[in-house]
Image 1 (tube, helix red, strand yellow):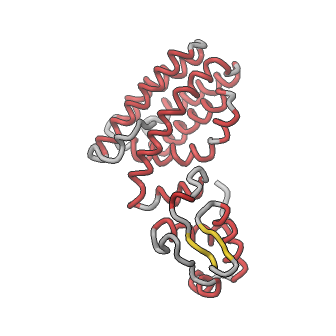
Image 2: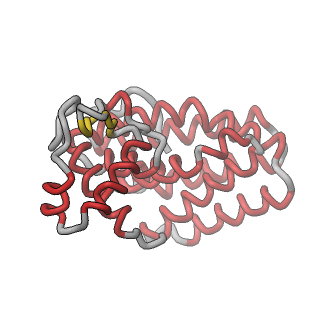
Image 3: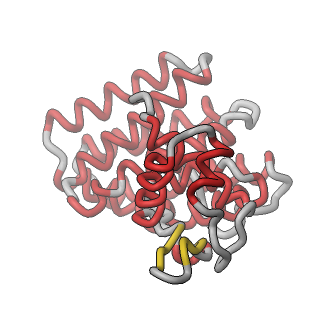
Length: 241
């Protein structure tokens, strides 16, 4: 991961405070000198960070009103930074995880079917290599999660669907958060390896219907894991992993 520059750091600090609720929606952000003094940075850095946050939908600016905090409905939740800041807020995490699960259940089965129809030989080989990495690292949670994310990235690439592929940066954040939680389920990662293999083998066999069905089983398994970890709350809206 690239090291964040100063503007990115200031944007993260202000953005995290907004997501956390320190600055309520439709209220004015403190003036630049006050923020600069609090964060120990220049006013110019604050100004650049505010521009970044306007682009992400967290703030709006007006000539007379100043810099106004936007309500969550205006946030660009497909922006990887906004996703990460929201997932880091305990009060917002569970609802967002449920929405992540729902979004994945709508998208990933069709992505798997498209990969079976469109994936090149090289792309399918890379998918199988990612699966082998998951199997090889199943006893190392950090490496296992990285390999799991790699598997899903290969899946999206093999689909050949450009709009779906454009979601990859956001989906990487979503998958990381989902997997970090789901991997806590006793035996959950190893149990889902068989379903990952079923997805990969169906894609390799050029069988879209089987790939779609295998992905749905995989998502259902992960929903069960999340439900056990979270006491059955916050994941009923959809399926994850």
